[in-house]
Every structure is written in C-alpha cells, then in structure tokens.
Image (cartoon, rainbow, N blue to C red):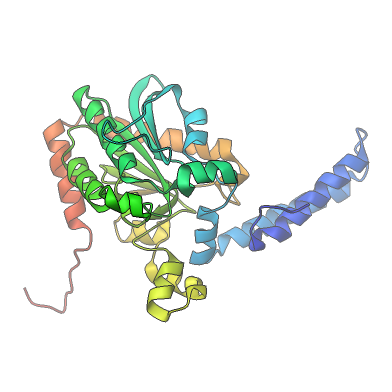
Length: 322
C-alpha cells in the first residue's frame, strides 16, 4: 500500500510494489524473471524521467518529505563517539536543536543540527524542528566551546524557521538569532554548514554563517516559505508553486547566485530512497571541505568568512557607469 509518498512519486512506488509482489509470487526458482526485469527497467526509466524534470515546488516537497533523513540519522551513519550536550546555561534545553562532540573519521568535530520528529509525539517535543531561543543559545555555547579547543564546527540545517510562539518572543528569539549571526561570523574555528532539508528564514541562518555552505540537491534555502510568500503577495497560500518559482530557493539557483558553495548529489528519487548513499555523500563532502579549511589560520578564516557573506547580493550592471 502506497503511504507517505508524494503525488509525483506514486507512479514509481506503485510499479515498485508490483515488482515486489511478482518477486514474492515467483519464489526461489525465479519464475517470471523476464517480466520482472522489464518492470525494473521501466521503474528505473520512470524514476529518472520524473526526477530529471522536477519543478521548484516539487523540490520543496522533497525537502519536507516525511521519510527524508534527519540530523540524528546522519549522526548515526556518518559519525562515531557521539556525545550529546544539553542546555543553554540560561533557561532550558531545546530538543529542536541537538548538539555535541563526535568523531568524523578520527577528526573531532562539534556537531549541531536541527531535528524534526518522526511521529506526532516527537514532533510536538521538537516543535517540527523549529527552535526556541534557548536552542540557538545552546548552539552558540557549543560553538564557543569548540573554538576554545580548536575543534571545527559542523551544522546540519533542517527547519521551516524559528519557533514563532509567544514564549519564544518573550525570551528574545530575534536577539538570539542575531547574536548567533554576529558570533558565527567572528568564530575562530572552521565552520561547515549543510542544508539537509528545509532552510527556512533566519531560523536556518542562525546556524548557517559558515566558511562552506553546502546543500543537498533536493533541499531549499529561503527567506520565507513559498506558502508564506504567496499569502503575503497574493493573499492565497495555495499559490505556493508560483512563489517557489519566483523565490529561487533551490540548490541549483542558490549555487548559481553564489549563496551556497556546493550542491551535494542525492540518489535518484531523493535522499529518502537511499539514506545510506546520502550519508556517504555527506561524509565525503564534510571531510573534503574540512581538509581544505584545516590549514588556514584562524584570523584568515574569519576574514574570508566575512568577505564571503559581504559578497552575497552584490552585482555589477555593465550598463551603469561607476
């Protein structure tokens, strides 16, 4: 039975289910083998056809896919010796942001990520990956700890945005994010950020001021959600697909505009189709970028990072005289 799949995925999933049924009926002797092989060829061709022509809004849907790997899934597959650290030392611990020390192929890193839930109970606990101010303050506390011991920082971003509740505003949500932006810009240790799902507004940027900002190919990074943008511009949240086109929020768009440094490939069909392959890609790219940053002095790192973000949004019009 097809469940938890997106509409445009259903033709492929239904064909895959038919293949599984035939395999079960064929038994160990491999009866109907030729029919199975033909169906598998059809499924692969259909999969490639669908995912080669995705619209921006379909990529938004993939970024939000309920089966997509989350931060702790990557922790399990890419890192060892994970030791989670809790609390901001001011108010509370925020389950929407997880953080702690881990080893990446023998290299210590401070790993910080936004974490969504897999079921209703966990999503309520983690507020669908939307952090409170104490989450950002916890993240900053861990970054400063990493700086003290010259440990690189890795952040995994996956949030619709910072939590908009009354309590969060009372405890200084905007101030907490602003302080993170300032302090990450000045941090004297390497920072690598990977957008693994949704990168929503300042809630994402609060963990994404980095020396290298990477995105998986079916993720998004934007100042506002397509539905929120459509509600403001057209008073109609159902025009989200139209807004997604205008926002240029896909990985390819953002790489072209030099907002992100690299796009990480996903298995055909998305990271949720083969989490192990997605994790292998993440691990390889993290090691590659951390290797590239390891020989840079702390002061040069900071100057490069500041210059990188100052360049974003700057453009040259040859029709204008200086």
